Image (cartoon, rainbow, N blue to C red; front, top):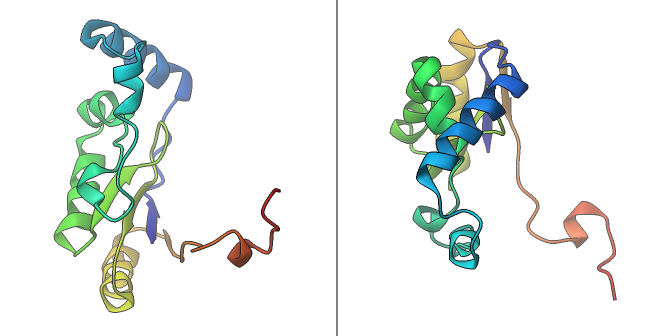
Length: 130
């Protein structure tokens, strides 16, 4: 997983205000069917949930949409903005592609991090609840 924070502060309250107005116009979120859209197949990145904040934040900061696209163009199997922004992340299915993308991002973005996901609860050092 690669993460880039482009040193671009996003005011969370303002993002929520814009998002609320946008969601109200779209509708369909306060229903079971609307909720179910968040379920996805873990093996199919195309089914993974998106981030509704992208619709409102990317309009004001198109460079974040460009950053997301750079992740995808660099081989990420999924990319999205984290929360209300401005960190953008990408999942890669190979270490080589992730390292190459991180090297490219580090040229422009000081805050570039490469990390791994945990496969199981045991990987996190936790004991599953019984």
